[in-house]
Image (tube, rainbow, N blue to C red; front, side, top):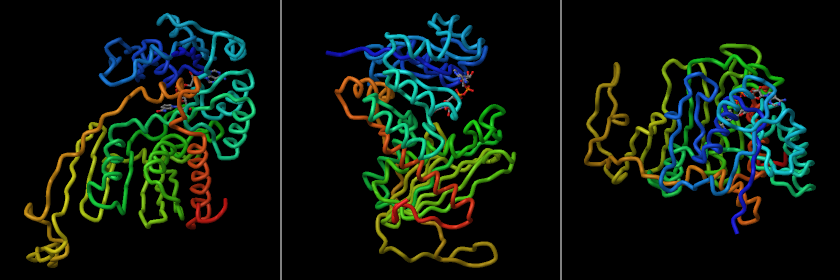
Length: 382
Ligand code: NAD
């Protein structure tokens, strides 16, 4: 018997407002611009075939925010509001608390909610470091309450495509994966610019990109080298480059920049029989596959001031050009799995252990940046 769960959102800014609309409308689609005057129903992308109808599983109990303008916004949409965090925790009709406040508040709110008998869906980065995550996991275990990390970017189309390329060896066996996001607006002028509030790109986009690589590649990471940047401010990292080496020798380059006026592609994948590229969030890109390594001969070409055979481009006789693979998935799977997990009908797709592993990796990234050295990761006990 399906049990519908009631969820209260704490922190109803950009992301929390998106959740309120997604859950309140029953579509499951968060909408950006929830903060702005420009918000219209036209922004809401309606249910797509194949997506779980979350209105059958999840109901918005209400929202709480310390900013009165957000309370007013909630009223304009007809959402119930609470006067305090304690009022949320004291409402017996609330099953789940969705924490969507600035990052430094996640730990204390998650612990308080679980101790009050509420399950927790927590925005990323769930915690600011691995020690805090271990404490929260302990409370989840003690109380029996679900603590669910919201790593929603596992449901991005670009990532799903790369997952297929990697898992099905579509460019042969992968030896290098590059994952990037480049913007040019610096750090947003809010709490994301302050270290004490959990600002910086490593905790913002970093947790997404690292989570996705770690879930995709089922191997231990042997070592990590990283450099954080401070091009636009001194308080927090406004970008980074992380270089991971996996046990098989596969390497992953993970990069975020907020000062890149010409952005590099989101993904570049190299296999032993081909390459793939995804240029942008519209998933424009291509895949090429080699017919045979035997055909090595090439006429030399002029390259700058010299000649090269090695770098001569291939012709279409030895390469097969292909469209990127199709992917189908349930955009509402995370919300749906949260409820199924709470009802005891499923295992968590995004696990606490996975979130802990990413936070441990982030600790290692910080160490590498501080020392300027490569840091051994899962090849030794940390
Ligand atoms: P935001 O600043 O737009 O919203 C935060 C809200 O929290 C504000 O409305 C603020 O008034 C409220 N708040 C602050 N202290 C509070 C308290 N003590 N009690 C109740 N409310 C309080 O920030 P945002 O962009 O919405 O980010 C919120 C969280 O969501 C962050 O953890 C962020 O990393 C995460 N996020 C996740 C994604 C994603 O794709 N998963 C995207 C954006 C943001």
